[in-house]
Amino acid sequence: MSAQPPDGAGTPGDAESGDESGEIEGGKRKGRTKTHHTVAKAVGATMVVIALVTGLSVVFLYRHYNGNLNVKDISSELGTDRPTPQVPKGPHGPINILIMGSDNRDAPGDHIDNLTGIGKRSDTTILLHLSADRQHAYGVSIPRDSVVNRASCLDDKGKEISPAATGVMWNEAFNIGGPGCTVRQFEQLTGVRVDHYVVVDFNGFKSMVDAIGGVEVCIPHAVNDTIGHITLPAGTHKFTGTQALNYVRERHSLGNGSDIGRMKRQQAFVASMAHQAISADTLANPIHLAKFIDAATKSLTLDPDIGSISKLVGLAYQFRHIGLDHIQFVTTPWEEDPSNINRVVWKPEAQTLWNAIKNDQVLSKSMLNGSLNAQHIPGVTKHPKNGQQEQAQAADNLANGLCA
Image (cartoon, rainbow, N blue to C red):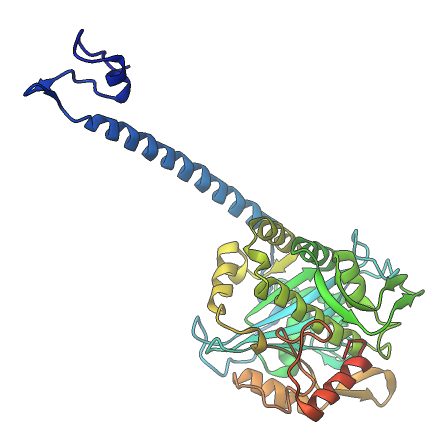
């Protein structure tokens, strides 16, 4: 408690205003400097409290989100015969991330296409290449119906758990050996070294879509799929998480019913999701941001080198200047398998594409033919007029179940 001023030295108002000295000099009372000191201390104490509370909140959230992440080291599962990087590594080199969509149909929320009991598969595989100059990002989709020569699968001690096989489905590797065998298969087939991997669970994917308020897509006609029990309206709509998952999984009633068409729609959806998050500043909303990070971290399995919030943020920060029109999605060049029209094989041009990725080259116009980017979404955003090329792209979109 503060001492009261001597009798007659001041008024209650003076004491309340903070003049506690009662000292008079030259018939005038000294300036009330202690008032400012008291206010300053109060403001300072308040700021300290706010800083502590904020700091504790940040620490809590950081630990919470980090705890959501599932980190798995697969380095021993990749073998000793990995491709050698052709360009400098490190923070100033290109980065290759193999992204796999985990279709665990026995998990709650994942078995939306009426298929259960067949284990865990990867229905979606995309190689995300981020250029060394931080100006381009390419997402290269690999058809799950690709017939390939699979490398042997190894366990976490580097011992073989499944011998190499020829003429097998691409996604068999994930079913046998998870992300480790898939990354090993990819490296052996393409000669491109993978720096990081990410597995996204489809159930978490739904939550991410809902966290940013839905994602806009456009389909050319209504869907009533009695096989997968999927019903979707025609036109441009903002889909919720469940609707979005139905959309990216649909393969019977959109396009020509092939996996290639579904893959194109997945590319368009991911592009639209990026557009929604970046151009509309959806993630600038702190509530949306918290929900999105929580949903994303719960759905991810990744390697230790990017297996923390700080590392993920650091990785994302490096590519903050890449424009939406430079986030481009292409498909591995393919053709029908001569022995099975329901399967595809890679064209010789596929290796040309992989060599360009390996050497961090800007992809040529021919390689980008039919590509999608996050700036122009079929049926969602306006695309600049481009004559015959635009007409060809519109026809390709319709063939694959996208709006023109």
